[in-house]
Figure 1 (cartoon, rainbow, N blue to C red):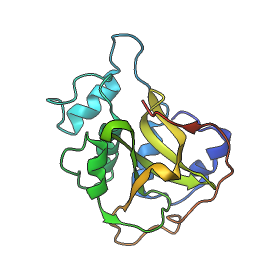
Figure 2 (figure 1 turned 90 degrees about the vertical axis):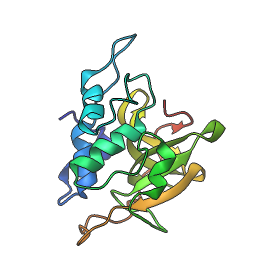
Figure 3 (figure 1 turned 30 degrees about the horizontal axis):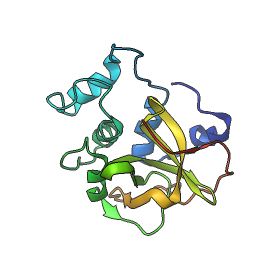
Figure 4 (figure 1 turned 180 degrees about the horizontal axis):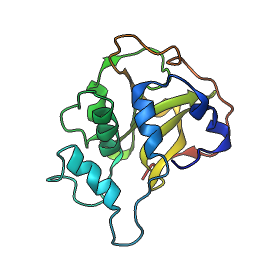
Length: 178
């Protein structure tokens, strides 16, 4: 497993982690291949989730694919059309306030979107563990004003660590997650 940036190292010490966060953490540091090559790991996620007919290259936006493989490995149901980020606004149940392990859906230009997992927040941004963020599975700060849905996985019993996390506002604010 690739190490997290120091500001997020606390995630590795957290027990128990929400199941989806646990699965996402294992994928941190996976990046697209440069040039025309495709990362076989990312293409493998499409095969694992049954999305090979629509996801054929890692040049296709893959934040929804990342969420699909994370949800599947965590034993959660996938949304219909999981490659479309905004479809994740139908996952689980709505939540008024984000907490560790929730899915956040963001708006982007021309009606497109982005999806990832909440790992924390600061005064102006959510800290998001997601795929297709600067070409990889990273943690990125995304403006709160772009969030259009907070969705909570169904829990039999939520882990005690599934709560809001307040973090320092460090790092740049993302404006384009591709």
